Image 1: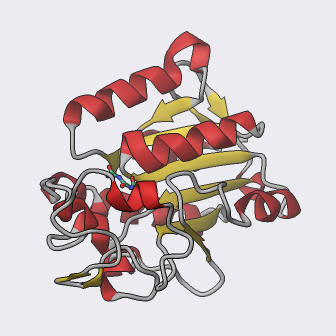
Image 2: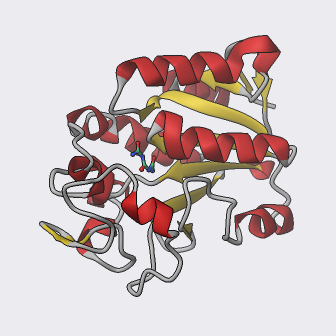
Length: 222
Ligand code: TIU
């Protein structure tokens, strides 16, 4: 069985019962003109991790680890968007407004797509989620249970918002969770550092962290 030299201690996992969850690697967060940009963020930090996320996805595909993608998205009529979420942050462009890549954070709009370099392939599940967590109001929990998944590797953006929320949801549901450190990013470097530290503190209170290279080494050595 592969064993990752992770923090705070070793993380053994069986590829057949493990899934990689790639959170919200969408143009809306990673490219200029999307939702992240409209909230006043510099998206360059997020764009920079695309090659590492691509490497991790390729690795998982090669070793038979199921790859699941998520997208944060709302229905065109916004009936699944709480008014509080719509108003929050007083953004330059609100959810549903027309931006440079179509309507902001709306399912089916160009900006809502996963970036081309990380596009899902046939057979990979895409979870469309209205919240920050991927378990809220989605079929993710049922899918993982039916597929016999017990271990989850996490990548994507942003570390302290959708990634951490989903990892906490997964931890409460009994999954053994590992966040791939260099395949996740935040608009705020200090928030990424803090999120990684709080996840693995107290003996891995939420889960483990390791680099993409450390996951690759575990898979190569098994
Ligand atoms: N704003 C921010 O940091 N993140 C989000 O709104 N969504 C996700 O993290 N995907």
